Length: 114
Image (cartoon, rainbow, N blue to C red):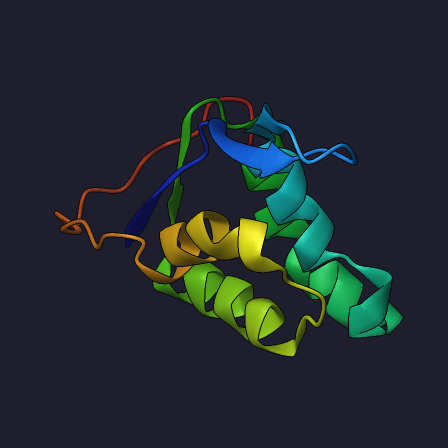
């Protein structure tokens, strides 16, 4: 299992006049956009396969726990995505360096899903 930090972060970027400005990077939105981006040319089945991961990320707050299968899907989409820039380095590093957490084998029972 993996625990992915979804918190936003700030970085500095030069504006059109060359002045450094603080920019807030919307981590969760960027992650969802990469997973479903047009440049991936997802077919319908591929979109449906990534959808549970997207929903899990959308409903999470500051972090999300991903199964190894979920994490592999995220990494597959990151490998296929084209268009990252220099400002995306912290974003990409956070995803690729997502820490493993021990799976204690306990099952989580969700109420209302009987």
